[in-house]
Image 1 (cartoon, rainbow, N blue to C red):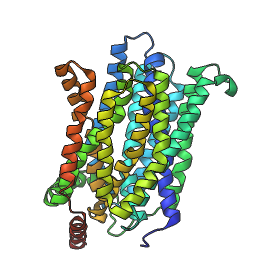
Image 2: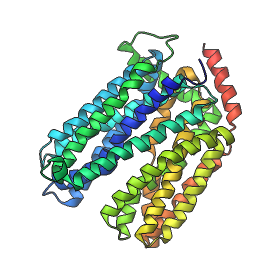
Image 3: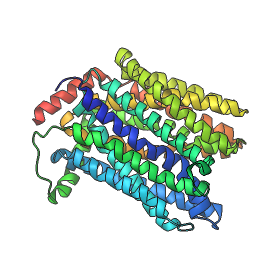
Length: 428
């Protein structure tokens, strides 16, 4: 395979441009607000918060359990694209269906949201695993970063348009912000569908050793899952990387998910926090590209270390902020490194795993991603309660970053590449 095929690379990266609209407009932006104010109207705030939290937890739990098994099945049947199509269609259908959910019908909204997240997250397992099919090792850092960069830009642009639509619904002939938000769900579904077409047409996967997909593959998937976990334990560098990744990405995701709550807690307005989210998205586009180049020049490990270092400084700075402008600068700082840490982690991992088992191994990788924010929020809350200062909780995340970086420092990438190739040759 050529190290770099432009058509395949752009087609693969455009999927991130498309599906990131779900992450920004639906998950981070409008669904939590609309769920509380429209679908749960009349319910106590604590009750609607519990319902939303339960929906997120159920969806994450399903993906945590299913991702490695589905990955094993997809590798056996060379079915990464078919699974990608299935989960993408599910996510698009569920997102578009949110338009039709009536006021007060929180149960249906929750159900569609759960299946939407399953479609989004399940699709990412197979999207990530196709990375090894579109690029060789010399350009893997750049291509991984390109996917995240286009995701930030595409998701941010559509989110910005949808925010404008809710603020000026009369321009679009809509009755008010509620109708604008309902139409924003339709826009996400269409955006996701259109930009998923290229990867379905132009990206091919290796068909060597392909087996027909049968029901008994589910049983084989379970047994293969156990075998894969055993292989990961034996591949000590992969195991060490995954432990380190779990810790530092927990810190990254905790900051992402708790930033708005933290801003509200220290007295900032919701409108300003939405603007901060847009800033993070738009800064994240060029920054992810830049980190791809850093990965090519210095190696992915060095790039991840730079990102972790910036996150530690951001965490310390967050403790002291008092003005809204500082929160915007903080959002820009997060945008500078968030995509870089995510993309270089993915490309480093793609280097040190057997290519013929990429979906299976990326199933574990995405499973750990779903486990992220398990330690961070609890740790933040505990430190805040013990200290009596909610600001002190944010400093606790430094422990996760330092521990993750320490484990990452023990990963010899060149040795990991050699071991992955040896294992792949043995299995062929």
